[in-house]
Length: 310
Length: 283
View 1 (cartoon, rainbow over the protein chains, first blue to last red):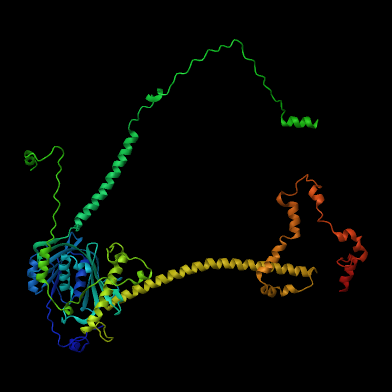
View 2 (cartoon, one colour):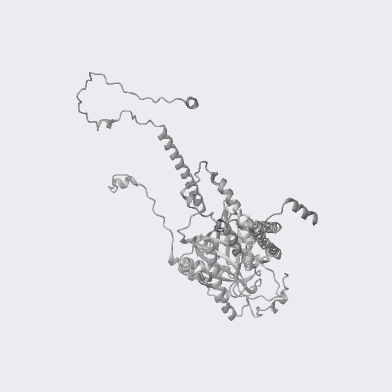
């Protein structure tokens, strides 16, 4: 599958010559240091999927976040996706509208990249996606804001020089369990048969800020628990279980070895005693008669047989 | 601050536990709406290509008349299959809605056959995927085959046993028929065609006939003599039942007055030794 020379691009179907790229959206996708392979692949996949994306080198975590705004300006980008990895375990994603706009921080979970063999679909590199949103996005103001942010970030501008004119895949954003689930499907038939391409991830909203990478907090997610707290809770629960078991064991031990109550003298033993009536003393003057014992005199079998023979 | 409160007489006697103030979470609805209004771009739909919709109707669950829980309510994020089907159907609904819109804006969705361009996943990768799928299929097929073979073997063994038993029975019948013929009891050679006849008859009928006779006379006699622990010693010879039992009475013989001897018994009589010798020397 070679790439067609760009001279033939105008002859391609669906690309009208009078198309000028007006919607100048550029997204800067980069990360901090300390990310693992999965995050790196996810970033690369997103860059593949979005032809209007630019890459940048890793940023040191020591720098303050508003430095990112300057980086965006240098690169002439107006949106930014910044991946931050903490403790080599948790991945946070910042999405922001660069100069003044809002930004949001998410915790990313359940990452599956393009390279997974179970995700069997494929699409043109740089083709424009359809975006599909859950109706729940329209119900809450913070979700509505996020929806607008996603639309502006993820939709490929029309007539972008690196884009392909066909629409052959669809991004879905769904809200379930207070998280945003992202999926990418390839459109096989126009009647709606789909295959998943990937990547796929789950976003857990933490905060929405008014400014880009800073500014007053507009929204905080009440259901969000930081991964550290989550891990701590698990550990505490496990510890509590162990302690409980130990306590039970000790109690049982104590029961076994504790001095038992002295049961020899029963206090309640005399409660039901009623003194018996005195019987008249019966004095026997004569000895009782000896009993007559009838004894069967049976001879042994052999003797009996001998007798019978005689 | 506790002491001050005590001094002011606000605290009651007893344990006063420090309660954390419940955390106040920011939800600045006005701010959110303001922000949204500020930064939203009113692009034509063609630029954004976004749609908001519920998932398409679930054909399978409709067919089975199951009440699907996420019809309008909550989607259970832990039920993997349900969740993925939900996402799938949402995407489907989007496509169904979007197709006419795209056609109107003359945006193509079908790639022509000769349009070669770089794909998101390389050809090598797709080959790997294909290989994996094929190998999975093969494994499944192989396991199916193995299962079937195992079943067949068990069944085959049963059938084999039945066939062997049937053959043994047939052989027995044949041999006894042949012996009967040799001994001159039956002069018909029907047993040679016996197989054909047997096949014509319903096997059930012939089996019934065989079973009617039950155990042979020899068997019955032996059972009587030795069966159930044998004859009890000291059994009375003449009891009421044995006296009244007239099954051994043959009227013909009783009133026949020695008919057999009178007729001259050549019917089933075996010739004497000298006669047999003569016959043998002759033939």
